[in-house]
Length: 330
Image 1 (cartoon, rainbow, N blue to C red):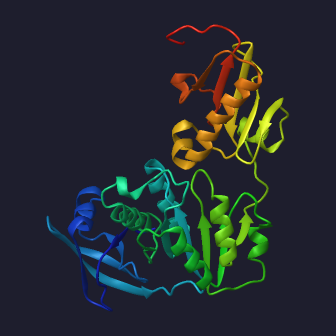
Image 2 (cartoon, rainbow, N blue to C red):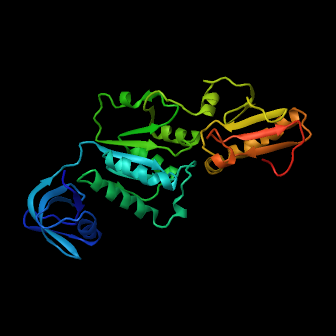
Image 3 (cartoon, helix red, strand yellow):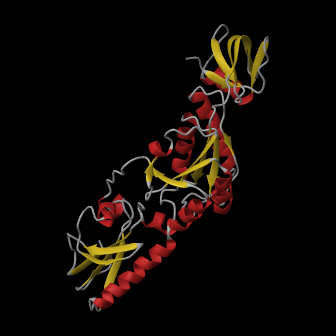
């Protein structure tokens, strides 16, 4: 398959010029030379097979051999993507682009760990990643990326969409069933952040007309997620909608209790950003349990990361008591 480059204009016949960063990449990275055949696209459906006729420091010139105008898909695919952590954001945009998404809407969800205000020109980065992924996947259409949307703006968009599907762990139907025997002109898919879509957001989106779906039966690999779901038994000491407390099977003190959020967060930092109220509730619950158990004093520990001794990467607080503790710990 021919290497693809992006240009502004592709005439019906004649020559085309690759300029700027694209020309630098073609000449210095891809090392195209006179006589090579490459492909160009304007990112809006038009592409051409061309033959290189000149290469210099400023641009690459090529003669058009064949031009194709590719229409958009009969179904426009829009993805509402919650902000993710910086190291995952690029991969997310690349996957969406390679998957054929037409429109990407960044969403500032309540549990989003990534925050655009912390990044300079975040929208420009997303668009640049989509542009590069377009070339890598040999697409003729660069997906459009809008500016950051609030939950209220997403709710309004759902109400205007022909079919909106929200990926949510309490999805009532599989995606394949929701799409069976339907041919909408536009589909909006809503993808939440690492911590999941909150119940408030899910309720708002459902009220606006979004249907809750899942890809299939979840396959949880996290030990604490399985305890939270009841798949693995544990000696529970406390449970409500957000927090679970149970005895540690490898106690390091006469009293050793683990307190976890029901929602999966890899560590306490993610939990603090995603569900700060739940983090507060964990500490309040620990204090209540310590009082109920008659502990004269207690120690609470969050290990974050392997070097700190974290072995299960689902945020959890250790509540230890019933003996004297020394300092420093560890």
